[in-house]
Length: 333
Image (cartoon, rainbow, N blue to C red; front, top):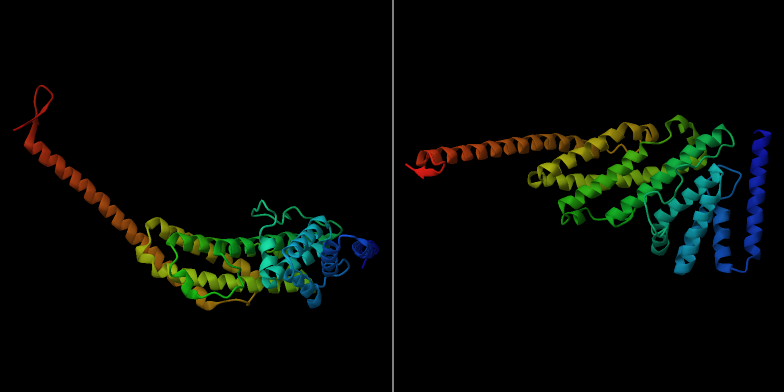
């Protein structure tokens, strides 16, 4: 470890200690207490994920009042947006991910409405860069990717109406409109598509326990996405005959995009979450969709031809009953 890197780590640790002392002296006890919990979970100095008891302390803030939950979310967001350290940013995102997976309803609710204006990029880390050295530059790419994954996770939850890790019955989608199922399938494919944008040039960073644990959590999210995708592809496949031509083409487009993510995701997850049943369903449904679209197109052409023939017959019968007089008016024979 180089001198400058050691100096940066020591400086970060001292900043954390100073911040903790400030929270101890603060007169705003509730806010200071929440900030202290977040500081301890997202310390400088190592690439190790927050310990289980640190995460449990954060989750515990969601079992109090709405004000306490709001203070918790504000504290972790302030920490995330103020830091320029890639490891601290990843720990903040990891903490947010655990709030999504394990937090109480009130804690998730406060996270879902942050900021009040909403938006797809609410974590706002698309330009994050820690240029301290070459490794932190590569870690910064993981920060940007991980933030995008969490944003996609929350987008899926908003569209589906529940969080990905929530147990749901497969029968719940039976009463859904075709358009709703297609919208849900689209947002699930968006998640898979973004997952495939992993920083492939720095996959070696998975040897760090923090990055390894992040990949594990994201892998669990992808397993949930696969489950939800399977349910919707199955239901839409059963309705294929009643789907319009445009709905069939939209359905096929989603399946094509999902297939296009497979190899890119495999680079990250290797043999995890293979889900052969899902890919077998995808292949079968795609073949049936192509045949259904072709059939609907042929039926459409037949309708056009039949309409044209019908109009031609009407014109022929009209010319047999009437003739054009010199005055320019049609008169009966």
